[in-house]
Image 1 (cartoon, rainbow, N blue to C red):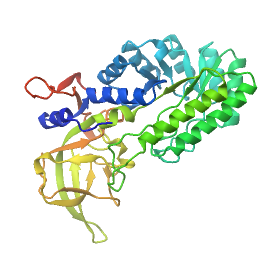
Image 2 (image 1 turned 90 degrees about the vertical axis):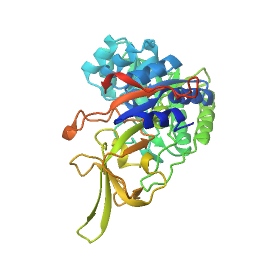
Image 3 (image 1 turned 120 degrees about the horizontal axis):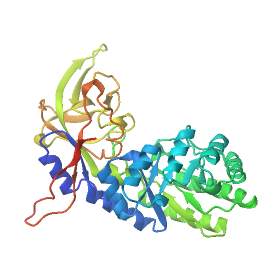
Image 4 (image 1 turned 60 degrees about the vertical axis):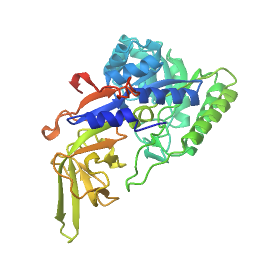
Length: 408
């Protein structure tokens, strides 16, 4: 998948103030790549990764549906105009009121992973279709997602049996191998687990009609905590998924639909932040070591939440080729968690970086807007802008367009 398109870089260069910029054409290209690699798989974009109306509309127009985790996300997905059959309630954690609201909005596909949730769904969404989420160990992912969601194979059989007995349709199974999954082996193990449960259900007279492969497809533009490029084996992952789909169809001995819930895979590398330097400082610590600190105008609470597990690539456009110093990079808030690369891989920053200098933070399109606070320490969410890749006549890059609301 391409990243750092000329149009995105041009938009960052043209931006006079801080903002998040999304390249809609890049997102479309990522979607097209995904459906080429997995041609028989329906796409349900994980809205939490980028709940921005223009991005959702772009994906909906391409053919995507949506994985929503709340009635509010469901309502936002409906506003894109996609058919209700392309929206599912993918959160296994929901109150009675959440279930009833989703059902009232027209949703008929619900994730589940417990008997209590099945009972509530049967009461407040009678006749709905449910798919049971299986637990995974999360090994190989930056964020494992292995504790809060999913059940064992034995529990999955109990859950689906109870769903059938309570008047629900036990329609499918789902997995999530962990966010930013870096191994193909995790997918292989997930398919083995799916095959075991599908076989057990078939023996009890329950024939599934779909498998939800969840999220986990990785972005390619990140650095690890020590500043080294993360290089996920994307081609191998796709190959293992295709092989696993074929095996599951053989196990089920019937037609079986598949869907996938990409989030960061579609948006991370096609979103970037134009920030600026707040201050470059050097301080001696109690142990006598002296560290440089580069404070940016954005950080963990307004755009860069995922700095706990990775480093973002940064560019200093006004200091290309300049002498650098290793520094800890941190956000502007009065909070010690608002920093990354501390006691890990320091980031090379221009020695002469000065307050107000522009900084481009790349491959941060996933979760940049959704994890942003509404003004922690008085630092407001960044405005959102869009560019569509390509060139206009005469070689000018496509113009930058601000979101109608200005701020998300």
